[in-house]
Amino acid sequence: MYGRDPQGRLTGVLFDNALVQLQHLQVDALRADPGVISRTLEYAASVGLTTLVPVESTTVEIQFSQRLADDRPLPARLRFYIDLRNLDDAPSLLRRKGDDACKLIGMKVETDGSFGAHTAWLFENYADAPTVGFPLWTDSELREGLDRSKELGLQAAVHAIGDHAMDRVLRILESHPGAGRPR
Image (cartoon, rainbow, N blue to C red; front, side, top):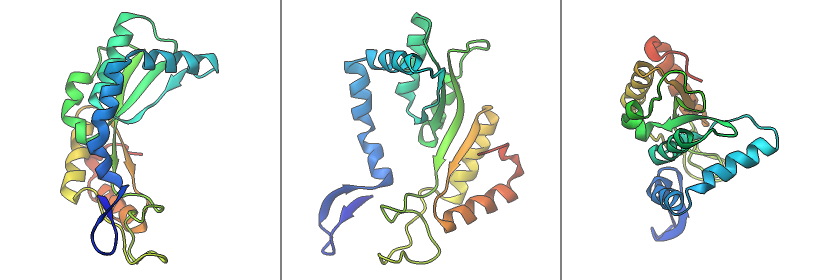
């Protein structure tokens, strides 16, 4: 979603799904400096962190990390949650058993936005804006994502901020016991 003024002109503010279109910048940065992952893990280990869990990871981020783990021992373990948008790539990212350095363990889905951006999905308008926010996925898409993540053995992590979003997610989970143990 792109921010617009009352006349409908773009304001330069990006919300929620609009940021997906910028993911190529992250990929470009990794390609330009693949050592950034190594340096991050070395720093994490130097301050006592043993495991990092990037949430909503892209396929490329996971692939770069897996290649790094194949090349040398990592100073800290990585546990990834792949974004629902990239869930179709998950089968190729699941690692062989016993590889403890770098694993895909879950799927993350955001069902609505944030309070600050007025995009969290509410039942009633925000006190300071004439909007209730909006959902980012349909009920069907959420159910399919939960089913697919369970089939793959991935824990689902569900983001729901607004009261309408939370109500919907809880209703889906109650009526859909096959979703496993989402968080």
